[in-house]
Length: 306
Image 1 (cartoon, rainbow, N blue to C red):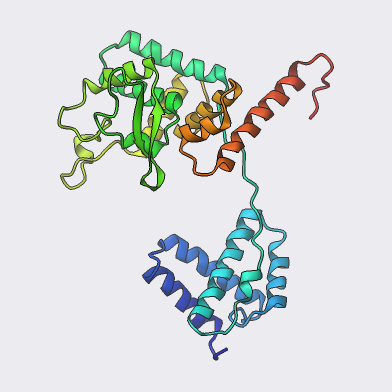
Image 2: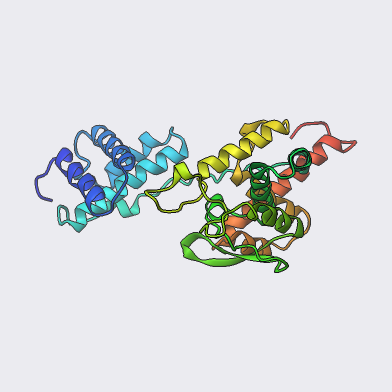
């Protein structure tokens, strides 16, 4: 290995992250902090680290939360791989550094009763103001989130003509620019068409942004932040703590309630647009957890403990 200090090697690596990978400033700062700390733990010998030195780092990471430890380990692995690629060192011991596995948290979801309260509140608003465009827009958004399981990014970017009367499905552009068919119920279709009547004919999007949100004169759509705010406001009106709900929670509820109703896992995977069925399988754990809780709460022999 050539004589290079940790500080110089880390600076080169961070410069590569910025110039060649286009990493965000916050990412670069986080990597810089993690590598500087690792260098300190190794007495300024991170760039020359061997397997024993990496084992020392792993012991330092052991008490940390798994997500934090995994981030630090990833930073060191990428750093050492960079040094070998740049011929600053001839080997890469980092490839044998195991990344701590973060436990995948169960997604938040809503009980069927909460969903019912949400839609009852929407129905009351529509009954009192049947022609109010903002209420019609919220109704269309919620119907598509819960009724079709769309991602927030997919929902706000829907084209104006996404919903065709009587077709029963929409074509959605999802992650990786992959198209998929998603179902649209009759009530969701009715909600969307009622809102669409208030959307300008020449609008590119079904949910366009206001005039003051246009991007340098180019048409743009409702932001995900605004969608998040609308869902939170509706939840508050329905008596549901806003912290318990978001657009993504409604998507989770769509998947969980389908599985609880007996839907096939592969079908739910297709509907959600998951590339890997392992991602969809997390919802089976949510449904199972709900069943266990139900038994513990209501069975005559349950003692209330887990």
